[in-house]
Image (cartoon, rainbow, N blue to C red; front, side, top):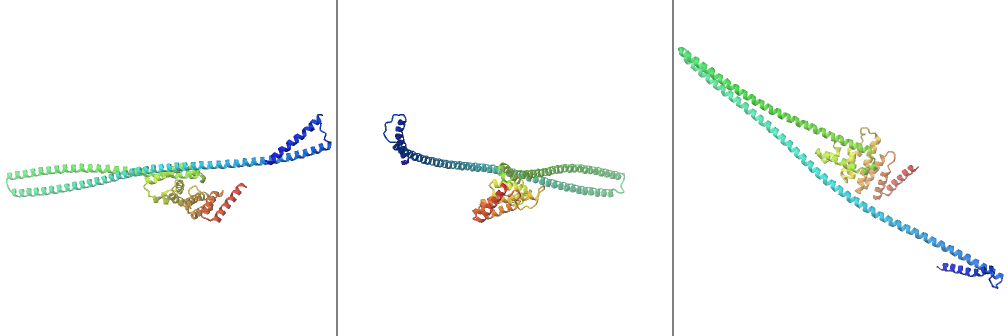
Length: 424
């Protein structure tokens, strides 16, 4: 402020002293000063002017510097406020996404629970019907066997009694014939009458036996028809079982093809974007196990599926917040050294490296940093071209959280070297 007032005073003095000179050039000045005084006055005025110009320049630079600092300060404050607004917006968005995710998971769990209950009820009903049908078939067979045995016993008893009656009649006839031996013609007639009655009785007995045999044959035919009907139902059940086995094989093949397709078409960094497809595959896989009545321990050996199914189901479990199932499935994948059909050693190692990566993420989430670092290192050891930057970054994070500063620095140095190679 002092320099500004001084500059203004110098300018005013110069203006006052310049007026007589201007008036002198017009011939209206009556000043009697000498030329030397006027020259000194001019020099003094020039010194004042130079000093005023210098002060004005300094003042201008000070104002410009202050204005620039003020603009920088305003820009910094604006950036900080913008960053805070963005942080709050990101936090709100993350919170909303978490809430939506929790609601979605809860709704999916409820639907899955209802579906499982319905499938269990249907399976229980189907098994009850099969048990009832099997019980009915066995009861029917037992009844038929009992009736057949009773009928045979009745026929045996009937013929035994019949034979006894015939034997008694024959003995009576023989006794009568012996009594009439040597008698007259009347006696012969009586003999003939006895013989005629005997033949008539025998004919009637044979007629009754024939009718009984026909009735027995009809009963046998009826039983044979019933047995054929039961055999037909049994064959139908066997055909149903064959159809069920075919359906199971078709569903198993569809799951295999789906897992293979997702594996071939999805690199590691895109699995998160394939969340709906992974959730749908997990639902189909769990439904298959539930319909087949397989226990939870069946997942330890892959439930008869190839390693591709365990690979995709394990990643789906990771993104579905099921660390136990993810660990079980991905452990099987990481330990499988066999090359699948159409797969070479590089593709097998790449699949195993991804499995180790997700195992490391799971262990790190549960603060098992040493196990996480071990899994990440195995993924790095199996790396192919290009080199695995992401596994090194998460390994460095796990090492830092485990206070293994040297290991963290080594991983970060490897990342810098890889990025440098990529830039070159």
